[in-house]
Image (cartoon, rainbow, N blue to C red; front, side, top):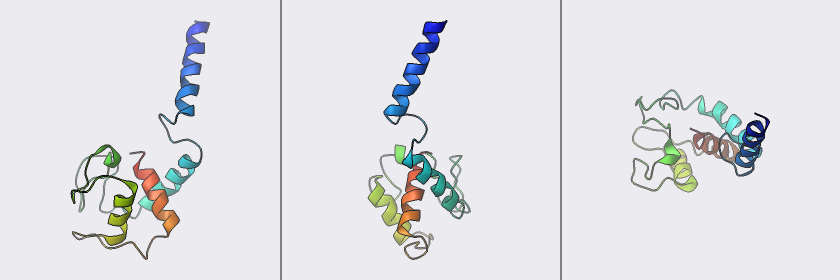
Amino acid sequence: MVKKLQRSMCAGILLAAFGVGAPYGANATAASAGKAVFGQCQVCHSATTMARKVGPSLKGLFKHARLQNGKAVTDQNVRAMIDQGGNGMPSYADILSAQQKDDVIAYLKTL
């Protein structure tokens, strides 16, 4: 029983060290701040289900190969979508700060 517990603890330490699982350190702080900023996005976008609201669900966004506009899912392309908007989504270029955009992207990576 003790050896099993030790193995479990070692596995948890390794997972945390390699960033697997829940957000860790600074990324956790950014993701937490991003979740708060995402509050204004959730009027149109779901983060917990695949259901479409006004806009597409963002659950698992960074697990997809492509955005709806056909571009690869990268930090830069997601930020461009936030900045430019499109298809009924307003531009957030002048509404959100650069830090808020970074935080939202960090949060989207946890979905």
